[in-house]
Length: 283
Ligand code: HPA
Image (cartoon, rainbow, N blue to C red):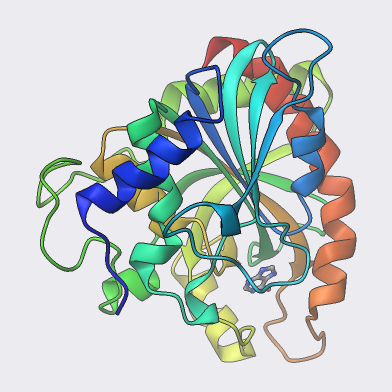
């Protein structure tokens, strides 16, 4: 299994540092179909283009194989803040270790990032959710983690945080209130709820959907939670959004496919962009 030493995280951070002139304060992880958010990033100075670094050009960085994931960092200004945007992520189901899946978060921490904004495409388990909705993540269930695949398994890296990190407020409540206020201001019907992380890649059976619903799950996906656990471990504040791309069927009458997920993501992107642009100056 691929693991990293502290020096490997530092090497990647130093390579990035040598190419940028700003200190990123906010990290953004863009999920399936939400890549266009990176097009909004501007350069460090007005009129300049942002710095773009391909993952393949950074030591140790895993490169995603999923269609719709670009595989690059975009570093510059968004909403007046210094941001580092991860355009595309790796997933556990691709065969990467959870250390690879969360590599970026620790590199961002070394670069100076204090706040992580995570986004994903998710299936709607809550019956009142529809494709195109955006959900503020208020909490998560790390189902794959509880079943033995927690990204913090293995020797603890004290440089980043404590052996047994608290997860009582994984998603920052103040940021959540700001996101809800921004949504009201811009007339966006922002849902809120609990995201469950499953390893995937197969979508859920009707029986699994009924199980998740009975547990109080609102949205289901195959990402995000590993990054959030690692971010909280090293003391970052977290804000998370799920774009609801499909409704999960509890009776087997509706099928789910990746094309549908990518299509719905197109209407979700602009809503998340609007909310983020409103609150970024205050994060
Ligand atoms: N299930 C799991 N992950 C997903 C889904 C889903 O229905 N939609 C988008 N990501």
